[in-house]
Image (cartoon, rainbow, N blue to C red; front, side, top):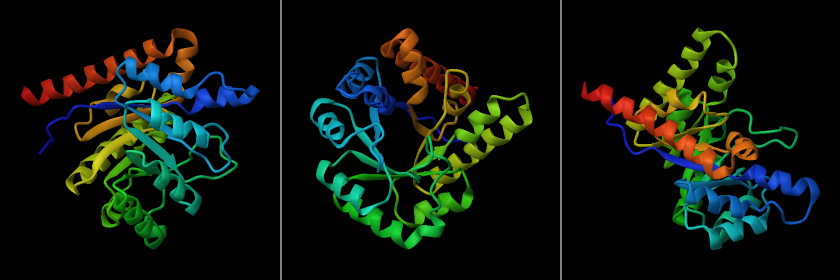
Length: 258
């Protein structure tokens, strides 16, 4: 039975505003200002990834986001003791645990929950005890989704990177295969009581098929929106992305009614 589509939220990742700032030093452009502009344009939440090497978002950014932005903060971070202490100090609305390697340009692939089950179980329990919702960034794989439910996560964020990479080519079969993985993963996660989010690499051209998946309730998009903001302004970019998401979700609802 197809799920009744819920309201689809947009979380805007403001990491790469900080990347531009850090390229020259100083305090401009300010990621907190970007978060406020995104909120004015209709974003439902703000995502920020505090990396171990602080290559973009800083500790001060997290403190200022919590103090200044009246939207839920989703703190992306690695599962380390340092990051756990930071999360417990700032108490974001949600923490999304992601794999992290110093040499990577961006997050590559999802967490291997089944391999790190015992460690992650303790980590999740500690965060939830502080009233922080816990999300796990994973590939849309049956084994990983089941493991996420087993260790008590509230949310899974399904990695859409392979779908977006396939969409750059001409092999429609590869695109359909990756979309089916995301759709099947969303159905499985929803059936296990997990809230379903998705993200990584989504653009104007690729967002609609993911937004149409009824079980997904939030998309987290950053790099593309910050890039488009250079040409069209951040508020315009967020507004357009929300319109594309809403249109796709309305088509899903219409299809169920018919």
